[in-house]
Amino acid sequence: MTALVVHPQTQPLLGGVPVPSDKSIGHRAFLLAGIANGTSRITGFSFGADNVSTLDAMAALGSHWERDGKDAVVVKGTGLFGLIEPKGPIDCGNSGTTMRLLAGILVAQPFATTLIGDASLTRRPMKRIFTPLRERGARLHGSSNDSGEDRPPVHIEALPEAERLRPLQYASPIASAQIKSAVLLSGLYAHGATQIFEPSISRDHSERMLRALGVPLEAVGSLVTLDPAGWNGMLPGLELALPGDLSAAAFLLAAGLLVPDSQVTVRHVGLNPTRTGFLEVVRDLGGLLAVEQEGDEAGEPVGRITAAFSQLRGTKAGGETVVRAIDEVPILAGLAARASGTTTIRDAQELRVKESDRLAEMAAVLRAFGVAVEELPDGLVVEGQPEGPLKGAHVDAHGDHRIAMTAAVLALLGDAPTRIEDVDAIGTSFPRFVGTLRALGANVDVVS
Ligand code: S3P
Image 1 (cartoon, rainbow, N blue to C red):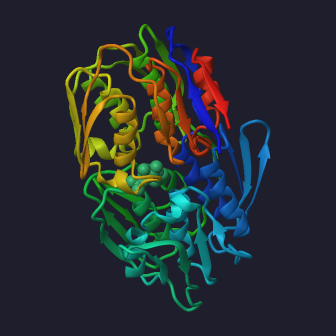
Image 2: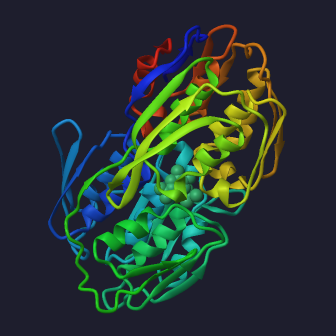
Image 3: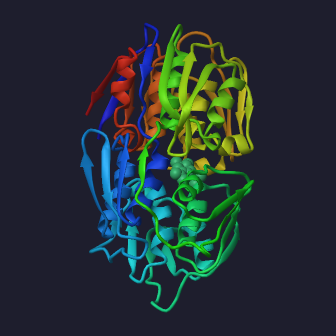
């Protein structure tokens, strides 16, 4: 297992850097390319391991992918009804999005499948997708654990030849793009309409991409309707360039906000409003950000963001803003560690069932750096420490990429080098993270 040693930053971080391709958009592109009629070409891809899990899963089901040059992938799809029975269980690696979205497609197939994952994914709840999919006639189950929740491996039974999935109207108790997307993907195969309602709008990449491919889909507020009546059941091959991932950019922007005299620019980053809660909370913290919209990529707004060193002040974040910043809560807690006063983050209970229990892990990381924090059932209360360095620390990321990258950013402010254990998972979302930090002027060693 790899560890990082991050040295205290003695100079400003300066420069403009690219970020990896958007992981969420990548998953959707590769799933839909796998069931499209014909060939897709997807460029700007960074080969993050989670997205490769989706490509490999679709290949196990009969589609074909190959690399084309530095950053492109060509996928030959099978058509909606052309997937074939895989030879064994499909390994989704560390990727919950792969497992949950793929299940939405697999419940409609005339063959059985089993989805497996790594130790972290095997701890994550799957009942949230079983409930709506079962309501429309799907037969799938997981493995029970002590809390009675269904966990991977996920076993999906064949849908008998004579059956189709039924129409569905589902009000999700959780604002979750993974639940919504699994339901919408199953809706491609259903006879009749799919309607999904969520408490607030989660990321809407699936809706945008499906609509762009000609699927009859309408969204009004947080109610999405997909009605295949009149649709020919064919997805054309995709031609798209993936935008950069704001969730990855957030770590670099945070480093720019925290290290004195820094100025960090990230280019060509997705600015979909269902993803920009991070930028809003940073502004509430008093962070200096300049956002310039550059146009559209793959039906998604993209732009350039610059962050400059800022005197931060405590704030409160919760409600739908947190849904739109759900993957950025760890690094927001990291920013709060350097704000004057108290920052309270609420409505983030979903963080307990991510790649790790991110509320517990962040509380442990902040304490290791000498920052006072209280853990709430659904959030964190952070007492900022804006003056002087943080304590150089020895922390364990426990295989969670976002905890590892947050710790690396805080380590820049330490009074001594910080060692971060178990960081390999950074490669799931940001394979060039260390190189990018170094390009900005950070001093980071990769050690084993
Ligand atoms: C994702 C949705 C979110 C997010 C995850 C990616 C997606 O999960 O945390 O990293 O691509 O649909 P939930 O749907 O569980 O909120």
